[in-house]
Amino acid sequence: TTVREENVLVSPFTDVEIPDLPFTKYIFDSQEKYGGHTALVDGITGVSYTHDEVRSLCMKLGSALTRLDITQGDIVAIVLPNCPEFAFTFLGGVSIGACVTTINCTYTAEEIAHQLANSGASAVVTNKVLLPKIKDACKTYKGIRHIIVSGHAEENLLSMEDLLKDDSKAFPQNVQINPAKDVAVLPYSSGTTGLPKGVMLTHRNLVANLQQVQHPDISCVIPTSDTYQEVYLGILPFFHIYGMIPCLAYSLCSGGSIVTLPTFDPKVFISSMKKYKVTFLHTVPPIINFMTHNEHVQRDLLSITHHVACGAAPVGSTLIFEFFKKFGDDISFQEGYGMTESSPVTHLTPKDNLVVGSTGMLIPNTYAKIVDINTGQSMGPDEGKGELCIRGPQVMKGYYRNEDATKNTIDKDGWLHTGDIARMDENENIFIVDRLKELIKVKGLQVAPAELEDLIRKHPDVADVAVIGLPDVRAGEVPRAYVVPVPGSSITDQAIAEFVEREVAPHKKLTGGVHFTDCIPKSATGKILRRELKAAALA
Ligand code: AYL
Image (cartoon, rainbow, N blue to C red; front, side, top):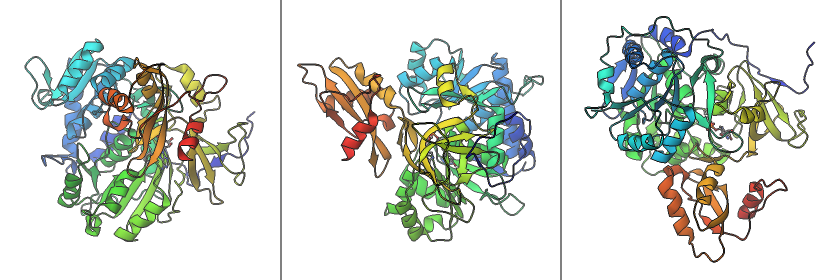
């Protein structure tokens, strides 16, 4: 017998079918329809590849990796900015049954070494510019068997360009991928607490999410035909789930063309929008803020763009209204909500019916409930706010080699606890009103307070520390540290900020400042009471 749970929300959309295919087979099969259309453009060099060429290059890479004895179950790390080669190695690796872990390319050697070690990677793909950092990381972590370098390798290293010349003959014809069990990608997320963890997304998780967001009542994409093709700007990092699945993978499987840009440079962003005639733009709130408020951005920036998508952090109603005021009401705008742990999309605002401030409605095949944060009881539609929980085929298999964290995040009934506080209106539009979890979102990217605290605690002048996120107009949030110095120390706030800056990627810098204090507020069990610190900071 099954017990019907109360207050479970069901998606208003009809279910979609989820084909039982490996992720890359799903993409490659869809691509066949669009063979001669452009698929990828390097936004810096202008070099472009058709859908047929992309598929063929991915197979060549799959073959070349196999010759290097990288096989099913091996972990391949990618440390690259957005570029066509990212796509080739990503899909090439996944197609032979390897699991790809994507690493933020602005990470320091230490941060890279940490993810390499935690994932147990056996190969790493990078470029010439990042190579010194990778070599440093490989002094700490000894498990890398192959370093593959794009853009002219040194003689003793493997060159991506050579691998792309492979004859494909070693591509394994007999690899058996179980879509529901086998992990395709391993991006990192801190989830609701602690340090970043590998998020095990299966082939099925990814195929499901791509099918879900292509539901005709939700998708704002104009289908590819002989006379029309969407042009996407690949500006959001492919190492993050938003850039990887809703941007890159969606574009490839729907016959779009995606123009890759390695970093957000205002001038290059503006010129690329015009040069490549971008029709569909994926953004995070800081990009919306930039376009709306920067004097160099004119209304005509979006003259060819028919749709703007935004997600990964709260965008705020005021900014949305200002955006429409500048660019006009005829641009369609869709906000998305989700997390790495849900591949990532769970909610999207309905097509042509934006409720400003809401992050949307449940996408097909997805269920949600809002639970009281004290009792865990599911709440009715007008019972106020609580923690949002999600169930659906896009919910991760679990955290990599971390059963405790998995159990604390996905309960026995399969509910993913998001750590976000939400409420709902009478039409089942969801509003994210607060964050229960520790996570800090800087420009849409994750910063785990626990990670910065572990680092700062290593400083000999620091007795105790807590890190919180504070609101920031441009970045959304910025990290701030509260530090208890050891007695007698004369350490300065600047010295601590510089100490952190040397060790972490730029978005993790303590832009919110360093404040000295006598003690860190903690619960009886020793948990840092971040919400108290935050409330005091904002008071
Ligand atoms: P992660 N509004 C408010 N907060 C949000 C939103 C939003 N629209 N989207 C994500 N978040 C926060 O793993 C929230 O706290 O994935 C959530 O738990 O880096 C956390 O960010 C997850 O952070 C899309 C496009 C989802 C992007 C994504 C999110 C990927 C971010 C759907 O259409």
